[in-house]
Length: 458
Image 1 (cartoon, rainbow, N blue to C red):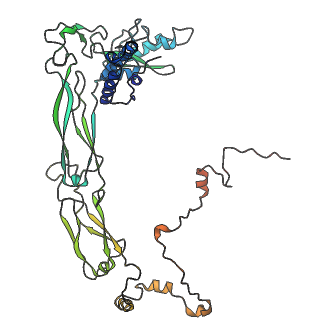
Image 2 (cartoon, rainbow, N blue to C red; image 1 turned 180 degrees about the horizontal axis):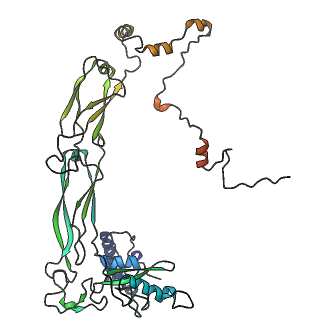
Image 3 (tube, rainbow, N blue to C red; image 1 turned 135 degrees about the horizontal axis):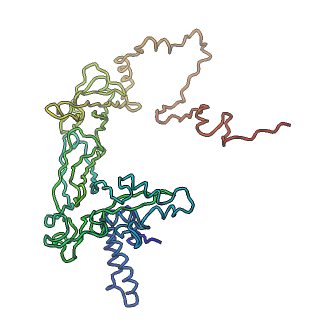
């Protein structure tokens, strides 16, 4: 049974490099032989070797990828019997050597090799150029940051190709030889089983020469990178958030991830998301807010600063005299929303004057019960406000003819309460026949479980 290196370090298979390093240090301190007693030293040494071996594999990007894919780290997955980890013909291990079958392993072997233009002579097809892993960063920004625009600066530490050995891992005076594992190609071909009776071949980096195609003596390795072919570099990265950018967008700095010889350099990606704002809600390029006024202000008008904008300006509103504000009304202020981010470039791109609109939802606070001081206040209010409905249609629909309703049939109701809209009962509409069928019920209301037995005729 294969050894689970992740279980040895007590981490998940999705653990990051820093988590693996942290777990290794913790376990190394716990099982270090120098800290164990004489009776437990042998066990500690064994455990310490397992931990060190697991860390050696999982801390190396190439070895870890090889381990995750194939469960092995032997360089090319080969056993001592053949180049591909099986026999000289890897398809024989899955299809046998004939055995009376119409097609055998040699047929599949020759077919796939001829597809690469080798005509059975074993010529190698060049693998696609590999790429280093992209670095991804996620941050939270405020709505003010997206309104004004912002530049994010962060310190980045990455691996770059060693400036001393130019990525070879060896001294300039070192005598190199062609790697016997990959035959100087830097990559090896592996056969991987993808299903019953199905296999595929792919190229992976040779772990013996680390993709260089050459080997050298250990004493000839580069002193600056210690033979790792890369060194660390620290620099400041800048990400510019353009005015009007939306939450969830990603800024990409191409070629700023880790470097490695023979690989295309990955990117650094910054994704930003907006924090919830106390005053504004963004919808597209428009801004929404709420403001509460009294009933007197709704009827008579008002003039005051209602909110502080995202750029620090105060927005003052003065309603016209006689203009009545009703519940649910919005005050729309043009060109006071978010800056509109344009995808075009040039003189007319990202114009700061082009912005969305601002919508302020007006909430009207009615007076509390028994608000009047004297009964005469009610009379004054009735004299000031209209006492009839404005629409003649509403008046006609709500008028009951006194001649058709005898006085004896009129009941005075005084026992009632005021019900709020959010406190009304929740009425569930009956399901239609189609909805019943979608939920697995037949039209008679019984749950359907496929075909039902028919009644036998008597």
